[in-house]
Image 1 (cartoon, rainbow, N blue to C red):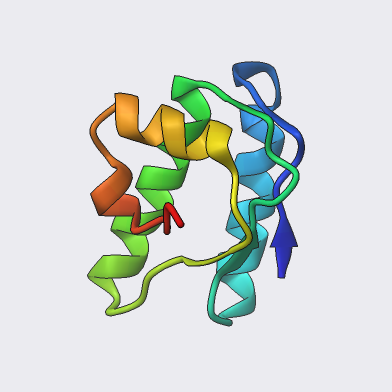
Image 2 (cartoon, rainbow, N blue to C red):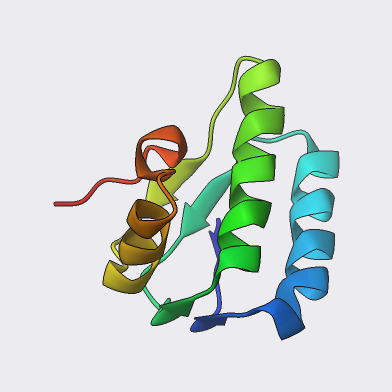
Length: 89
């Protein structure tokens, strides 16, 4: 399972992108723990959307674990909460 960092910001999106590519290369289901995320900006949410889009094209999707009010709020503000399928409860 991949643990997202506390701060999902544009300055660390390149490293996050590389980590996600490595996960895809492993060929396993993508499981992401969002418990530690306290800040999520547009660039990071866009990257997660790109990952979800890629996975949906291959009949998969991100399996989310935990809860992050910050990530949920950012995804909701951008209108992609339903697309990402992040649980709000």
